[in-house]
Amino acid sequence: MSILPGAASLPASCACLVVLDGWGLAEPGPGNAVSLARTPVFDELWATYPHTTLQASGRAVGLPEGQMGNSEVGHLNLGAGAVVRQDLVRIDDAAADGSLAQNELLRAAFRQVRARHPFTIDAAVILPDHLHMIWTLPEDRADFALRWRLIKSAFSHNLPRGERVSSSRAGKGERGVWQRRYWEHTLRDQDDFVRHLDYSHFNPVKHRHAARVRDWPYSSFRRWVRLGAYPEDWAGDSGDEAHRFGER
Picture 1: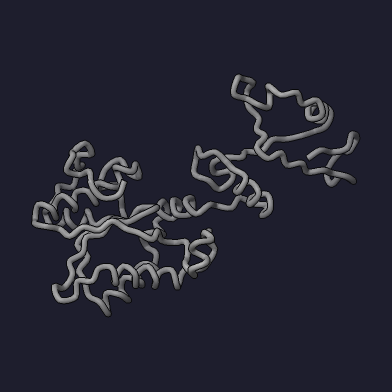
Picture 2: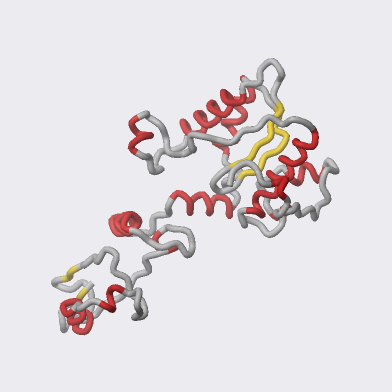
């Protein structure tokens, strides 16, 4: 914002807001296009009128810490006149304050589906952007795809709208909450079960959400510790080839 010469304070009788999309301020250097260009008009305005700078990346514009800004979030925050947290930041914050794991909509969706289509949750690990589950299904009613579809549908139906939705999803009447695909695997034996149990519980450490497995609160790890399957200080082994399966 530029204030006319002589104006002592806002509001000035005339003010101009100029948005230079993609124009950043940084130390001069071979990769700084602004400092390498001839900008006489900008240089004169900058030298003549009062001015300020804005943070245009990370939390200042609702993005994760350290993430570069872009036109979309810039326009969104300027138009709103406030910091608008992007979807990933909202999820990260919900994980940090505990509301993600305590999300009653998600719990209710599981309760609703389990009442009609029973299954046992052997393990569960909820992360900011995905979750891991190990289920035991009745032998005569083992349709896991139906259960996931109903859980996702029940959760999305009761969730307030506001997320970004691609044109492809919008055209099919879909929400932008869940990804369309998921990784599934039928456990072959007890060893296979243990490997997947370890992988799921170690996932928060793998994705750097926690320093130790026991530090991640949104996990069935503590229940398995109480059952005697793990020592409380179990750390897993991120370098073990046996753990390299599932999502990346």
